[in-house]
Amino acid sequence: MRVVADTNVLVSALVFPGGVPEDIYRLAVGGRIDLVTSRPLLAELGRVLELELGWEPSRAEDAVRQVIRLADVVEPREAVVEIEADPADDRVLEAALEGGAEAIVSGDAHLLALGAWRGIPILAPAAFLAEHGSA
Image (tube, rainbow, N blue to C red; front, top):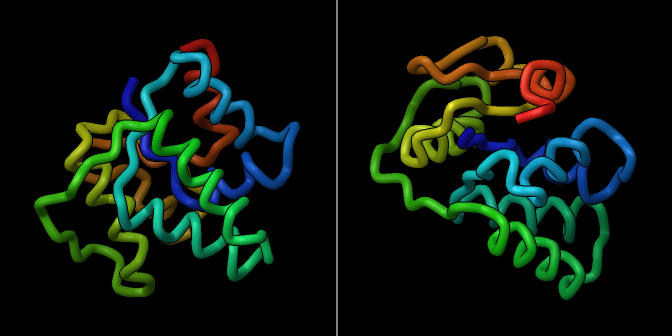
């Protein structure tokens, strides 16, 4: 199953071990789901870890490199304009579209409000794990 994990899920997996986001990340590490991401999402991950959470640049870069090794990094060809309230959320949709994702996992209210987009379910981490934890 191809899955885009929103930046908030990846940050939670990396910063708060033992939670549902880490369980989802471990599904990817174990090869039970295929993580899909994009350069804009990776840049956002690095920025959040470094600038918002105060990680040393080298530590943030290491975390981003780990995700790059684990994920299928796609280059979105279609610009999506869907979420007016937070256009940065459109980058998640772009990655899902380009990567042929079968699910988006996010804690973001704007994305979750969509429920699904172009047939791709958008699930909170706990809901995704409940449905696909044994993927």
